[in-house]
Image 1 (cartoon, helix red, strand yellow):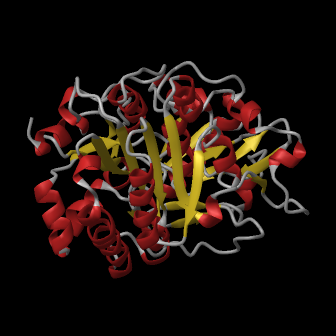
Image 2 (cartoon, one colour):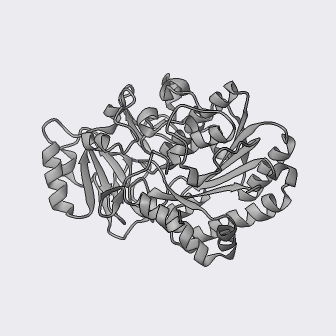
Image 3 (spheres, one colour):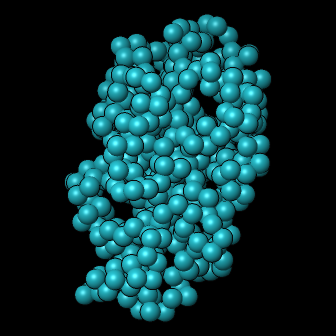
Length: 421
């Protein structure tokens, strides 16, 4: 099937005009973990492997490497291909295919999916911020800290353990049971973050400074363990940082993509020994794309006193997928109010619709997840955002946002490279 046909097929799963549904049945990031296991000759419980058009079915490898480029969306790749020779050459040599990410299309949710072999409905990490009922607090799900707490402490210091939070084994623990080694390479400052502690349990971890030494580190790791059956997960966040600060279509974001491919060629691929390439499956993908936020497209909820009076909590989730906890009897009032005030800026759905449409990958939810989802979901259309200014973020300055279901956010590329094919 041609690339354009695959993209069109994925886009047949529409929520409505302008918003699309994630694929959990063979055409999405949620299918990558099972694909990795299959490529190493074993299996994991969870969403099925990718459709056969995405990878070399029936072939097993000594080593699988998955590189996740944060915010590397499918539409961003298409733009980069037209602007950067190295990207164009790479795409021509190793043609990518489109996938959908999961919902919400945000890093904490995607990383947990990839590192547990479970859909969001099952692992329960559904946004940048979440309401933790047991603590009676809203927590940041990247560093696992209570937002606006008087002390800078993680939820682990409140008695939670990584194991109890997820309630699931990580893929690295599963690989260990199969006698397969596993490693995670991430930025130094992320090594001991709350999310890393939860989802990298069981892996050997190492940090890097920037993209150049990241690829040197990866190459050396492969060279030191040539005969070892292994899985290596590599996470690089800089495209996301640039997209938030400068916008997804900015020159600065393109500069980060050029840096990635330059270092990939110069520090990794050109120096990688053939004996390593022979038994290697290398995959490169993104966790989501970005929607460029328009001037005047941000809804500051805190400044809307009428709206705040109908909520029991500030909005949680992300700027482009916000969960509302609404006072009893006020759901219809909130829907009517937002619909009349913003007309075509937002798509609203009740939590039961979110579940029934299986946007989280299943109608069966992890126990306790329903409390985190609240009553209503606000899905902004392209260019819009919902903002609640906590004390550490007084104004919304981001020029790119994600977590929603536009094609800019939901679709990501997958390069699946086997040097023997």
